[in-house]
Amino acid sequence: LEARLRHDVPAKAEGVLATRFKVFRFDPATDPEPHYDAYELETMPRMRVLECLNRIRWGVDPTLSYRMSCGHGICGSDGVTMNGVAGLACQRLVGEFEGDEIVVEPLSFFPVVKDLVVDLSPFFSRMRRAHPEGWLRMDPAEVVEEARQAESDRRAIKDATKCIQCGCCTASCPVNLRDDPEYIGPSAALLLQRYIFDTRTRDVEAWVEVASRPHGSVACKNYFKCTLVCPKGIEVTKAINLTNARIKKKSGG
Amino acid sequence: VAKLRKELQNVMTEKCSVFRIENVLSEAADELVGLRKRFSEIGLQNRGRRLNYELEDTLELGNMLAVSEAIVASASARRESRGAHYRSDYAERDDVNYMKHTICRRAGGTMEINWKPVSVTTFQPKPRGF
Image 1: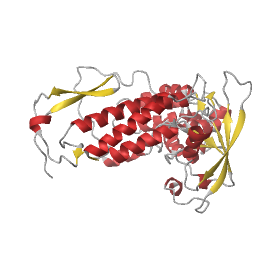
Image 2: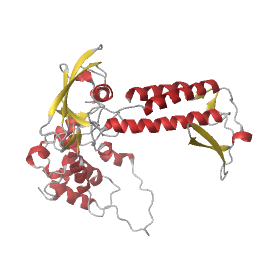
Image 3: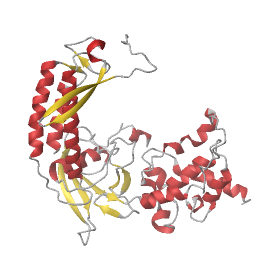
């Protein structure tokens, strides 16, 4: 994964390729059924999938809809499914895919708004659900001092703070997709770990309580899909297990 | 739309970037007039009312054109160098004539330049040497 993120090892060599993009198309307002459109593009192994989508929209088919913003893996807008695997279109290179066809579909789990654009509100409502009631409420009279943290303490939450909330993990998690659709999802469970293990958190138990609820972190079944797809390379499952181990230990299990 | 945007980006990068010269800026201004005319004749293929990114790109391009016109007009009017605005033909900073803000408005087909005095507060402005 590290190597993949460094763009070191495209599966294919240099040179010009002919790539076929099979893209999911659906406008729920007018289409009875989704369909796929195929676009043939001249590509290079190091071209990003997002660049190819841009070429399609800017030069071939202006009716194609997909989200993008920063275009380099910071904003998390362009989460899509590529050959069955969720990821950011701006991070995946054409050369990483086997064969000369790339199937681009919207993220699973979320309802499609149009083409590759999904409605992420089920994702963000889960992120909100992960926050205990009144977690930011503060007495205005209280003197707030700089909340310092030792480097060694920060290490416990460093990985979790890298999350950009793109939704790729939740869209790939078999618990969300099959076992328990109400599960808060890997990203929200990761957020819980971040607050539970942060030495500056005031009311750790409030966060632990959220994590212990039936659809909280404890619903994780260690499929490791989140860790595999995470565009930021976060060890999501490991973090969730830290929380769950803490809960188990406390309940004497 | 995509072609016009690329051309606009090229003009601004090549002719109105870090180093700016009078005659190059006026070339840029002429090219912007051409781009503005072509922009006014632009047509859309995507008639969709939801998530129509071609429309979004077009509105964005209109705003980019307006900002570019303001930048080029203001850069031509400021015959000095200051901060990130470097005029190869006027390399020195000129506090006598240009210690003021530029106000740029569209008036009919042209860009109208006005000036507003600077109110100096805590920090005394002075040339920076490196």
